[in-house]
Image (cartoon, rainbow, N blue to C red; front, side, top):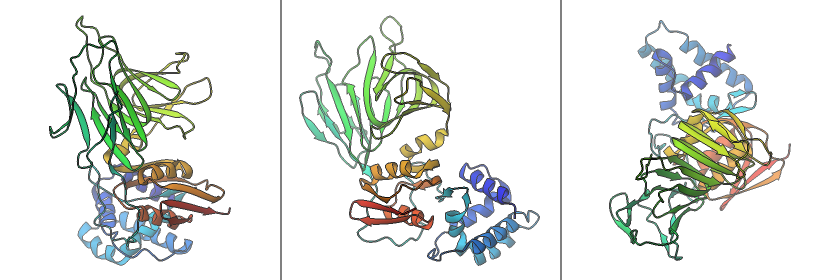
Length: 388
């Protein structure tokens, strides 16, 4: 069997690059993932099933309609291939989804325990300069600054703000998103920010004429609006985060700056940003499709990056791209507000694939168990048992 061809097909399907008969066949396969997947497949069985799939795909002269009958014979085992088809130590956590915002897997029939851990949701608090704290509505996805008021996206007022009062120091607000939460904010200049779980953004209630500065802890996606002062000069936009300063030159980008991560990572989607350490030495200008890594070393590393995977979280999707197991579990722990405990050594596997973030924890755990990793859920604790 041509293993390389099969692996290429999996990757192309992930990237929506298949067309014609191949895509139609794979679509039918994924649409049929509503069968029992408890059978533990041997290597021989998996190889046999791979050969059957490749044989059907390579029959390009055969009408698709006649393939449908054959599908019914082997599609009950389709999920097993995706869970066990490996490229070295890369496991595919694969489920197809067409939705852009918070896709669901209602068509996938997987038994969920009644006491299962639910996924994150819209959840945040807003803290004002005077110490006032507001628990924001979970029925709304974000807040906006609008003519002296803080509102929800539907226009409902959260708080009246006297934004015209002259003060020596412009007051700041802090939007805090806990673990198991997400929220958005439209800043006073029209810039949009999406905050991921366990993140906070400190920002002014109005921006000065000289610069726009926000402070980030955690992870956020930015769409920065251009703004000029009365003299027609561009007002700089800066993002301060762990060990770095970002000078924004009109752009879309993602910043991951969690304190429990080894590096602060900035991924540029479009436009341009300059990333520097607080002392401004060794600054790097990113191009779209590049990522900077700022850590304890004196150098700032720049490398190509899978942009889609880096920003998928804001569209409600886990997208792993050869992600190390411990790093993947950090993402999962933040979103489900759970603690991860390792009994033994940390697995060295890396994972690739897409999956909705709008599923209960047991769905993800099932995939990981099928890849050979022993996991156990106890309340809000995920225990990884790996003796190797």
